[in-house]
Length: 326
Image 1 (tube, helix red, strand yellow):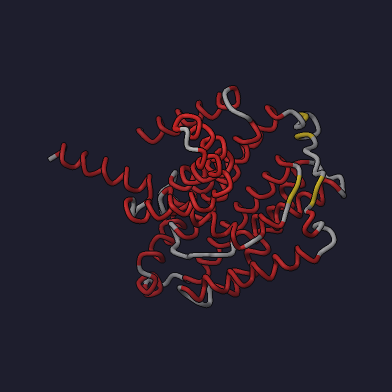
Image 2: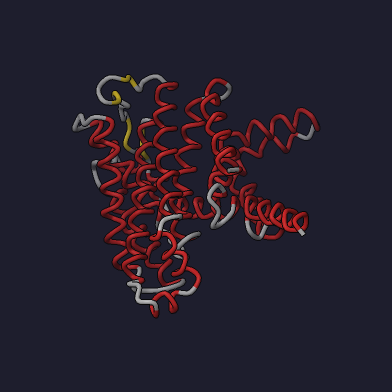
């Protein structure tokens, strides 16, 4: 019941948020939050560390951008195309990677994702280093004009809520219970008769599809797609979001995404404010050192919040409840 109240409160806050903050920034945060949740489905609830999720995020963005701009597809068809391509890439990549475990699995996903990155770098349809520009938003079902930031925000919110709901439903389904069993003790899951590789592959493809949904939506929101979204650094960024927020928690990746994206976008403004208050001009350069600051936050979280921000809070409140009950 408490979770339902918390989710309801969060939804109400998100509904009124564009009245208080810049809608495009909020949409960007929502897309990255969904991306982090998709990644967490794989590592947090299946135990597979992929270092190639940027491939799905970037590929979906490029595909959706091309079909919307050059082929004149509708908004819904463009997003769906990105999701389908991301899922297909996930199937191919997963089929190759799940044959290995541990660091070998991680390195295979990284290598395959970087191969795809170089394809995007050389391909003409991506625009190379210039990126894919001029992606139109179009109309939802041919009626609602998404050129308005407010209209687009509520569509993005609906997409991200639906994606998050799918992840929650998956985790709490019998399929999700098997994934958790695989994570906890793969050998025992095999002894019970489960086709572990098949479950891993399904989880990988589902995670890739949801990551693609986030990437395609972000491209439409921003209006362009660049190689940054397909680079290995983006895979590292989503790992950082998940670990900082709380690995294996439902809302941890969302908290991590909000924190990291807000720092990337607002660190310069924060530094200027601190400089004005403290009269130390060095803080004005914080905006140029975003990777240094995020790295520092990561170190602090690893040292002080082993379970991530949300994980540690949940552990503290859980301990308090148990002490009260006893």
